[in-house]
Amino acid sequence: MRTIEWRKGTVATIDQTKLPDEEKRIIIKNCGEMAEAIRSMRIRGAPLLGVAAAFALALTAFDSKAKSKEELISELEEAANTIRRTRPTAVNLFWALDRILNKAKELPGNRDALAGFVVEEAKKIADEDAAANRAIGKYGAELVHDGDVILTYCNAGALATVEYGTALGVIRAAWEQGKRIKVIAAETRPLLQGARLSVYELKKEGIPVTLITDNMVGYLM
Image (cartoon, rainbow, N blue to C red; front, side):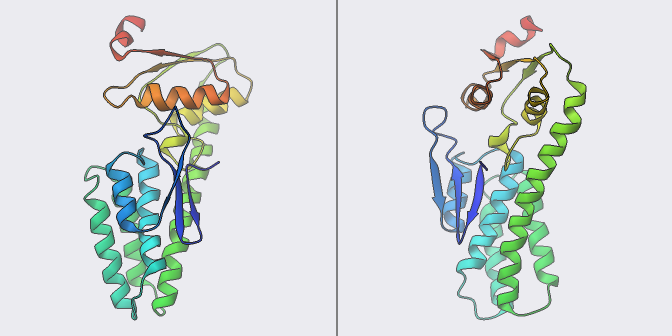
């Protein structure tokens, strides 16, 4: 199951503020709702923020009443500025917005062709992220040996991406290869992404995990 999905004019994503007590999907219908979800940390994680930003533009294009290509470009730029203000330090978010806008401005064709392109490009960014995560897992698992104990911090799992995860993707891939590993997850204050999200993901996969407080890390190592 993907953390975020395009659903015929809406975007479905997991509300990460409800985890681990409740796995709730929210439906986002427009750029404003996407911006609110990012600001409130319902959506978080660098790769996922990039895809969310792309889908914000897709929602704008899908619902646009613009009559010309130029008018639609203007709407997309306004939507991009709205999303940029949510997380000014999020590199993936800015990258996805710039990728779509730069290609959109050079795209030949009419307004309808542009709207269709934005939706498809956003979906392409999501698919690329999923493929990259699985590749990271495959190559990273080569560094994990049977019996290893791995310490993690924050959450770099499926919840931070479209699916599978980056750092937790490596752990997941090693586990799928039959390596008997154990994970120690630091809680990650103040929002407890380690305690609420990483431990949740690992337990769901059946991977042995122990939760520790952040200030135990030095002693433990």
